[in-house]
Image 1 (cartoon, rainbow, N blue to C red):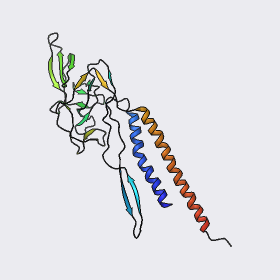
Image 2 (image 1 turned 60 degrees about the horizontal axis):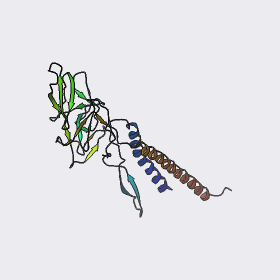
Image 3 (image 1 turned 180 degrees about the horizontal axis):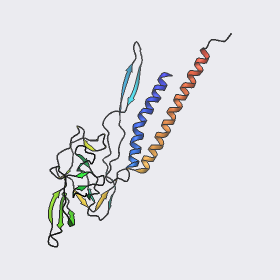
Image 4 (image 1 turned 90 degrees about the vertical axis):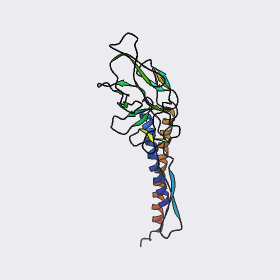
Length: 253
């Protein structure tokens, strides 16, 4: 019975990671450019007891937090502050929480009170030198496919365009990316690759999260049922153990 209980408890513990990933995906399904979390594959290991001929195999949810790189649905908004990466690639950001530079596909931009360019989460958008972008007041803004930002200055002639910055982008083909504890995308060693401007930027469109709501809801229901089955296994083990104890009890005189 001890093995049955530990097996069920191990399964319940591993379900926690999957339930967190599913809940996080559903909570962020409306966040532009969000990358769907995937549960860790984990690994098996063995516990050898002292003076024992048997071992107990356990499954451990351990390793980097992976995510889906599938493209989200792209919708046209017509807003000049909205951008999206056409295919593969990432933008560079400085998280508003103060963490290290990270990668993102979120393109709902806005200008902060101090003139710095931010995304919808308040993260700083970075240029090719990985520095914050400051935009002067303008009548219009254009972002070309290379990520270069052009504006029409308020004090300029009608139709005059001035280049003010270039959004840093990268296509990290040879790098393994993962999400860190802060939910930001970086290379597995915690760094970010150098900008190579390999991504194609589109203006006036926005990429949605690559979360399939139906799949996540079905997975959530399946996880709940698996959790209930493991609880029944523990209850059954308790009942069998109590029945065996009663059979071995000395008869009362």
